[in-house]
Image (cartoon, rainbow, N blue to C red; front, side, top):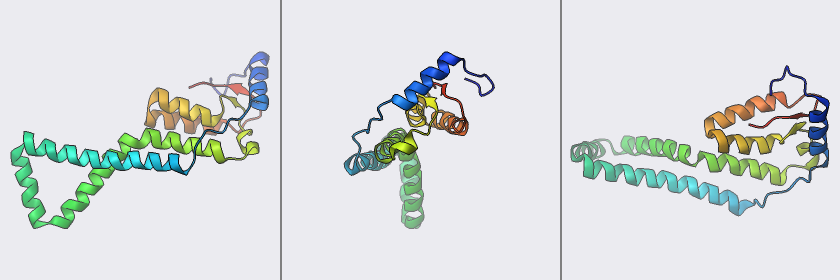
Length: 161
């Protein structure tokens, strides 16, 4: 829905009823769940590094020899480069559950008066999860940021990703 289009009365009433009367559920999120998302991230990084070196060793033996000679000459630089490369790859792989986990932590620990400030149906945190699941991480986060900018209005609205 565009910001310029004024919602009709029935849409405003439905959104207002949703925002004011909705039972705010608290997702079952805790420190254990946060550690689970961190574990997914760490295993993604480790898995990517193992797969990469196996890929080099068996499919491109010349490249594996090249890497081996680089490690012998400059071990610190190769380790730092490998860590940064696999950290970035693992970060991209584990980004979706990580962001959704942070949103669920917010939903669990944020006070009710803060969560009820959103004038949209679905709320901004629900919208973020829906957008990331529908469009992927980068487009979903972009749509969520655009939604956050529209949230501080005076009129109840319905806006799905």
